[in-house]
Every structure is written in structure tokens, then in C-alpha cells.
Length: 152
Image (cartoon, rainbow, N blue to C red; front, side, top):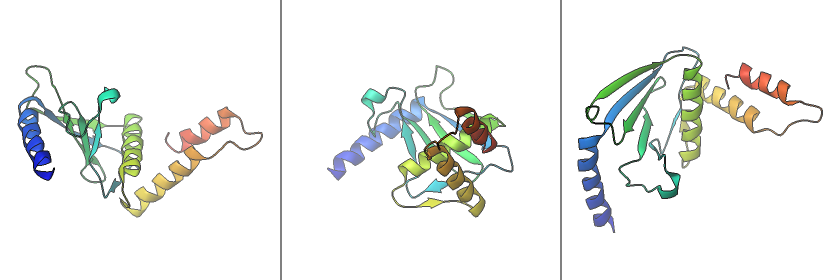
């Protein structure tokens, strides 16, 4: 079984080297930091009905440090394959990048989340606030205002 997986992985590498591009996203905001985990590579697919680990159409994301995300983009248009793209993400998009990347790390982690104290505390506050039930008498406008203060 392991030999079969290695053979499939080697075939996948050959396919991805021919067709994929690399994107490095930099979060340009001193108040926003990424976390990572013990299982940091996030695989997603625009066609969730057929998601498989060795699918060459999967998008692969990996936080490199507290400010950078590496993304392997599959099936690029002709002329865009084998390229490296650099994106500087500023507010409000930087906040969205941080939130989605950190959420993905938490969901994908097996046991541990890693990051600076500031990044971990920020993540836990956001997680706690976004997952709590509404209190009696609390309206959605108040909730949205509080979430906006947290950067959501």
C-alpha cells in the first residue's frame, strides 16, 4: 500500500511540475499574524464532490511564517504555468487571509497549533467570539459590530 502511494505521489509531482504555478501571499499588516499546526498543508478543491488527496486539481496552501502563505495553484491557463506570483495582501483582504488560513490550520491540526503568543491569543479570541451562542436580548447588529471590531 505504501509503495502504491509513493508511485501515485511521484506521478502527481510530474503532473504538477508541468501545469502548476506558485503564489506567495504576504500579509502586510503588523497587527495580523498567521498560525500553523502539526499538519500544516491545507488541500482544497473547487469541486468538493470529488476531493481526493492525490488529485492534481487540489489547491495546496502552507503558512511559511507569521506573514507569508505559499500556495500551489493547479491547472493554470496556458502561459501561466510554471510561474511564481507574489501578492501583497492589505486590509480588509489581509484580515480575510489571516482568518481563513488560521481557521484551516485549526481544522486540519491533529494535536498542536503553533504561533506567537499574540497570534494564538488573537485566534482564540476570534474563535470564542465567532462560535458563541447569542445571548438573550442580543441582536445581530450588535454581534456584527463586535465581530467587525475583531477583524471579521
